Length: 293
Image 1 (tube, one colour):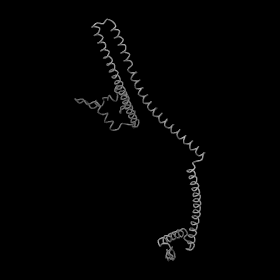
Image 2 (cartoon, one colour):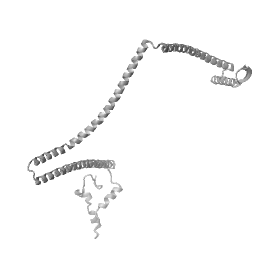
Image 3 (cartoon, rainbow, N blue to C red):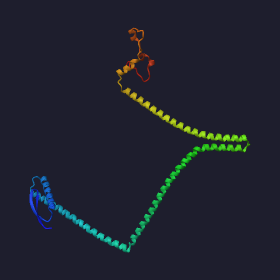
Image 4 (cartoon, rainbow, N blue to C red):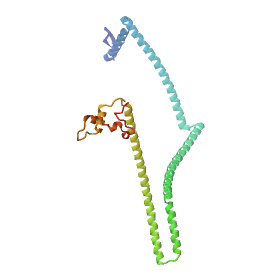
């Protein structure tokens, strides 16, 4: 690519350069230098343009030197890796051609044996886990059967007693009347077993109903205690002075009505209110609003 002249503007200064690079690339460089000059001038308002340009040049030189050192380090590392890769390829080719050395072969065989042993142990562990799960299921089934058997044991004992009694009777005098009695006894025994089973179910239902009743009663008691606590709290918070208008209205209807004949007003005013004076009308927990303090 032939060289040509490029006209650039850097921080208000027009300069011409001869280069082989494209116009876009050179313009991007000029814009970058202009931005750095503006940053330096903003940071140091009294600095001259020449000093700012020198500062920019120093920054670029510093970056270039550091990048050169980093490039050198990377190149050295690349050379080392190339040497290691060459050695590795040689060792690999030798191993493929002649096989691994005895020490490496022994280590590989040892690792392979350990790997196989670990795989066998892992398989045994999985098998033991499956066996444990199966045994737990069988144990639960046996426990359920044992519980059912313990519940049926009294009935079995009673049935065995009836069978023994039946056998004893059969060994006695065998008459048609005895045969009918034995059949009736067997029928009664079967009915008795069925009735006992039904009675046990009924008892279970009654126990469940009793438990529900007790829980309901306990809940009702708790509700009553809570209501009583709220009433006591409301009374404690109420003022202890004279009763309000609403309380007076609640008490006044309890006063005795006037006689139909129309008594003397003074005599009417002298009548006593039983709620005020009679002790038998006093109730525990209630205080008359007319009680004198």
